Length: 499
Image (cartoon, rainbow, N blue to C red; front, side, top):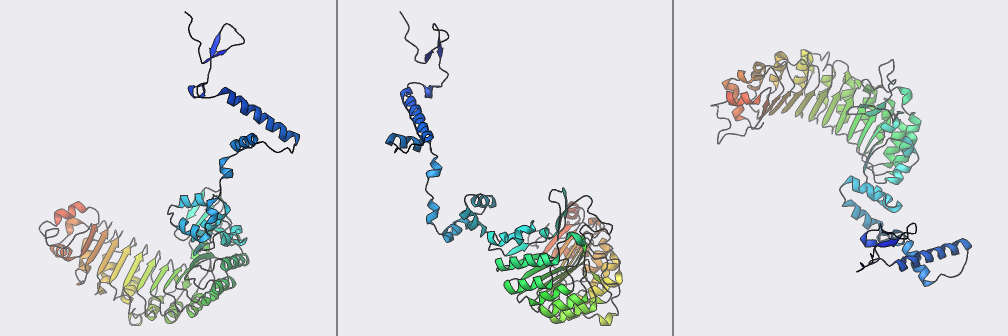
């Protein structure tokens, strides 16, 4: 009895006596796929191709139109439903997307979505000056409120693998960029002030809602453009600025926060002296926060700021080059509440006589970070000027030993003390001062290696038990728990002990 024919077998012309099996899978087999239908589509496609090559204008048949619709992409024929939505409605939808990556993908859909999504960007760091000077920045991002143009103001190599980074500046460097003067950024590598002014003018005309801007080597003219066009500007950072350029700062009506970077150690060098301080003081009556980095000056400059900027509440001096006697000018800052001194090699080389120092009547906080405190006379004068403070913070300061810290006993209203990285201070030196502060309720001691748990006296342990907040990690917190056994700390009903 003969076997039924194989439905998947195909005639082999090379060997008439053999039949080879089809290599198509089951879903392409004759049961599910009509071979006659395939042949009809192939013939129809060849027919349409011959018509297109012959240039015939004969109208297409219904079957021909159907075949072209099958071959065309469905995305190209899909209607744009977003065209019926207004820009305001789309912008409201895009605002609800929180992830930055998704917003970036949205901007790549089409030109319209790219323009609408650009309105969501409010802060940007410009890396290419041509992008700013051509007007594309303000056109692409019309709602900017925070702009940093300093990286674009320096001619650097973007493919360089060397990045100089600090809290104030980031710039790419070449291996041969360090000059004989020890500076990484020299004057010739910074854009000319006239070119900077032209770019700032274009930015000011296109982004009138600016609240904060960071600039470099801008002149009085460029600052004038900003003052006239951006009336809402409240915060300005000026790198590589000079005394005369600060005339333009006086034109800002609502400026509240100003940072002047005259000399940035090892990076670039410029001069801001008493002349510049006097010019900005005369025009910045609403200034609330002022930071002077690498600025030269003296008693006259600080006095002008104190007398003219009567709303000033926070003053920061970083790596200052002040002449001796500047401390006594702080008494003119009648509304000053916070004084910060950072990265200074000295406090005041010649503070003068004690009776001439005065004091800040409203000062509440004093912060000392990464400063040299070996000059006992300067430290004592500073503490005397700030004698009514309530918060004292000393972090990573060199030379703070027991005798220097003893000058802090002049503070009578201290409520919070924070010591970090004071390796020369001992437990005895700490105890001799803090026991005299009757209002102290917060204490923080971290990485002060000479303050040891084994040297804690019963008087100091009693003080710990009365504190509202204690953070104690001079070297080992576990030993502290054992040494405080029986003092009442951490027992039920006592005050909290935070670590």
